[in-house]
Length: 319
Image (tube, rainbow, N blue to C red; front, side, top):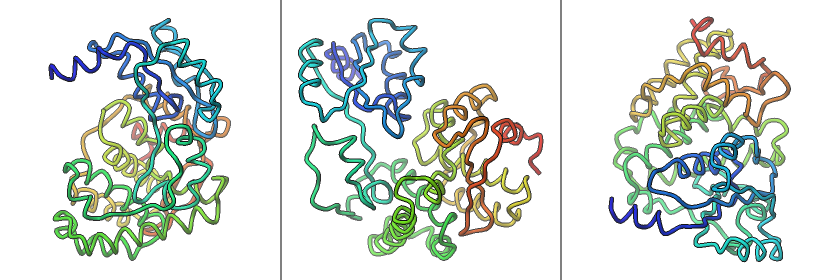
């Protein structure tokens, strides 16, 4: 613990890239309120597909000179040099989301251009090394399984069947089995992304569980996968409540999530959930493009008013 405090206090000026996105803004929010950190955060964000400076308006008001936002493309060497010179930067915290079953799968070029060029060179290939998974802490490993379960429920009932039959081997991290399951998950992701590269339609399905999951993650501090698991439960409840999903399919989802201890008590207040829903990237006016389950292996995008989703969340309409 003493070592951690020493490291934090040594950062007088910290650059955070992509700090207006969901993950980056929450990192800034937690760090600047940490009693062990007294430095200044310079948030650099190009404000592309996921960045929203309103996510940190309250931080800018509360912490004044300790929080600085600049709209900067990190590929712009001239602007970066100016920032480094002006603030005498001690460290850079760089946010990018590569994983076995997420953005690394299909055409990562635009994502890398936005998030990585300027810090790392673009990779020639991406390796999914299942042996590496054995080195992860238990909660990190389980967190990743939530995304695999999500992929099956939105697009491959057969994958769900394989996971159900192999809970114990999966928990033991058997490499050959994981290789097959990851390959199947990658296929789901790649087929969706190749059909909708710009996330204007079917690609939204990959956000199943994330609308409420983001609120849970921000307020509870849970790992991403655990929060998304909670979000999937809520989305499944709403799907049943609105008549799109049979209760037996919802129960199947909850049973599988419980098999990996992914569901926790994470009830978030109405006001907090409303705040995050209104910031959701899938929002369109007063409605959200919400991911509804129709059955195991099939999800659809439905435009639903935010207030209706909130009513279901508070249990007024869920059966």
